Length: 383
Image (tube, rainbow, N blue to C red; front, side, top):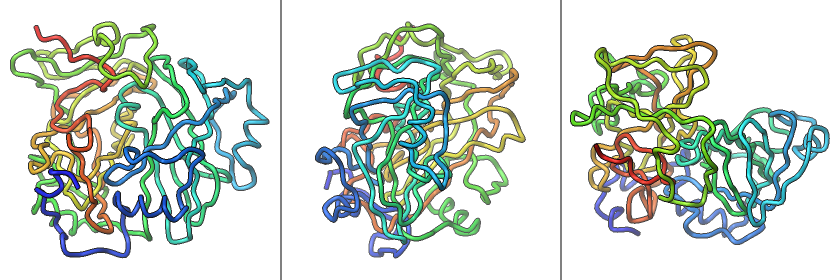
């Protein structure tokens, strides 16, 4: 147990629950119990406070298009039908922008009917605009593993902005496991928000039916006025396993505060912005960011939506942490302004507090973050 874990007091420190998201120690138990298995031994650092990092296998199939297998097919059936060629990624290979790849993962599942799972890209994957989704045999939804599933897991990978170098063992997405079904009522979420301050200084008259809304910060730094970044097109390759190696100026254009604190999103450009509010995830909860209703604008926010227990918590050294927003507009230019709602946070209870929480004690990259590029880049140069 890390130092940060012992300093935090979970909301339900003396209670366990029959339903909810499984914490790190329960995930470890599933590995030992062979409910989670793998072609190579699962490393301890794959186990996050409320999720498991998934690793790429040895090959990547380039396919004609994205697909779901459907009830009557396996992923292998569809790859045989729509595959173009196969890459050996055991040492390394380039996945090119605009292409779709299916990669068998090293991990597989043998769930009972009471347990299901949900996947999401890791934060660093989303910040590189690598569209990554989990698929399963006979699956009818992306990123969802139904209760009772037994079989292999696959990643569908499509780099959108930067071509990337990957290899066997690279971790692009993560899996969260759930026991039974649990969700907060709006009244329960109101009480939790009042007690903890899940989203600092959120919009007035909160409607929490679909989660706690958060807004975008377009005021930015008082000193520099920096409010975000737009990805450069036709930039160089990025190796997903290299941290702090790349000059951000070669890959990103800075966006500064305008006279009216608005920006216009260009169709299919990729932006990194930040929430106006600080976000807190209590030690016995997890959170997921979901896109805001497209009826208010044709844009997508945040490919990578998991927030682990302890993110942004003062006792874990994360006070003041903002949510970083990965934003892309579709079809038409779209203007957003400071304080506009861009998404919602859905909080879920853990079955029990985890034996590790998000923070520097377990090598977490984004505790205490503000506006921040992914871990592959050097810090943005100060003026």
